[in-house]
Length: 68
Image (cartoon, rainbow, N blue to C red; front, top):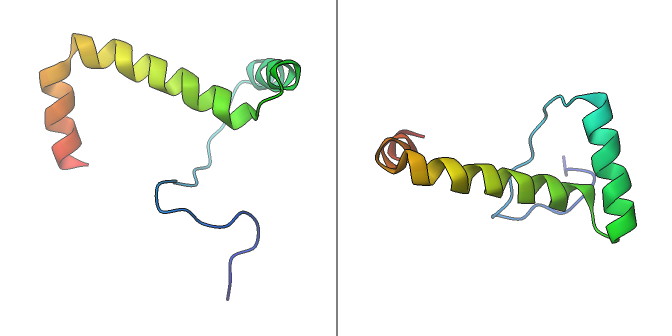
C-alpha cells in the first residue's frame, strides 16, 4: 500500500515528537511572518544546537555518530 502525503525523499526522516504548545505556536506565527515553513525553522534551530554542542564535545559526538 502506498504512503499518503508528501513524497518520500532519501535525505529526510519523518519523526513524531511532542513540543511545548506555546513554543510551537510561536514558531508557526514566526514562519507565517517570514513566509517559510515551520519545519524549516525547527530544522534551523536543531542545526544551531548541534553546531554549538559539536564544538564542545566533538570527540564524544563523533564516537556517538559511529554507533547510531
